Length: 237
Length: 267
Image (cartoon, rainbow over all chains, first blue to last red; front, side, top):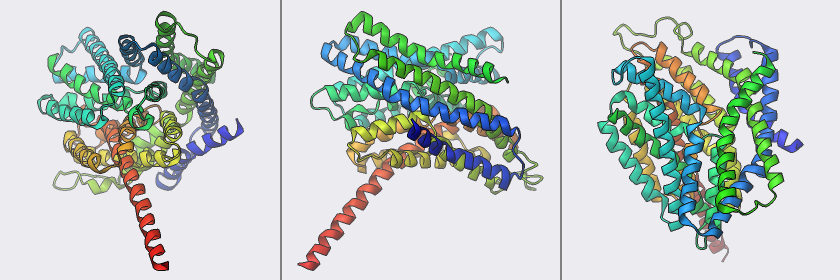
């Protein structure tokens, strides 16, 4: 536990240094609320320590155990349903996504795409969240299917990028920034380890798959599909 | 905010993150797989650790780093700091006036990425799966460099007001070219590292920087120009991680060649 705390401190040191440097050397101001700051830093160090501990003990083993169990069961249908549920379920409740969806509703109202009142903005934001969650579900399904088939990842991802570029040409400029950002916010700190463990677990239990080459790549899909789906959503509404 | 209400509030929003996963896992476990998970008790304790850890982590960030980081982002982008009127006589924004903003953006991107828990998770997994050829710190520094470059470039874009998709599409083309030449084994990991960089620590600070900058640079629309920094932060790590693999490949090849030629000399 002590060595974990030490490595958490090492992980956080760069942020503290950057902020201290800019505060003193560039902005030339003293720190406000020093005691708040100290309490906060202690909490962050403890938090990171617990998180890494829990990662090794909870998230990774459960993700891999599930992957092995599905591989042994051998039902493709259920595996894909599980993949969709994991992607959809973890994204729909994601706080970062809720924030960005509300932001996007404001943009759409300002641009005149939807009516500028409370109800239509709420509808728009909810539709956007469901769209992104659905696209992440689809992403994990496609990614899991790729692992099973052993297809090279880059053909699919590059194909997806070409899709993004083509759709960008037809999308309205207000939605582009939000669509591109929504790709990055979908994958939360809890989802990433879980999904990574699932992919690596599947690739280890299937003969002929290499965990490094085939096991990674699920996150890449989950950051790609929301861009496409959100731009399409912007066109349809 | 009181420490305990802060903690309770963060715990509640972290539960939102963790509960869907627990529900999906338990649901499929009970209804479909019907097979006991090995070491269930220990794994559940692990989940509780994750919950406690994330709660403390986020509450600490909210208390210490986010307010200060956001304040600094606004101060660095404010006209007062930039030294009077950043608009030149021609009415154009001079991007050179924002020098400290780019430095701050790069340093902040680098430092926050090193502390990103999701990236730590992926790096740990990658090291164990690759048998040590991918090192935890090598990967994390490569990703952090990518985020630093990406965010610095992203702030430059906001200052100059050029369209986002020109940069992103150019980035895709670079990724495409690198994919052809990079070692096969690194490609999936590189693509993944684009998605993991941007979560708990980086997003709030970077979003504040983008919105602050877009609202203070004359002629920028917050809603159109304020977004897009996260997209930069997800794209450039792909490039740097593949670059890291290419460089380390090249180094080991060179060393081998040199050793071979040294051997020839001895012979």
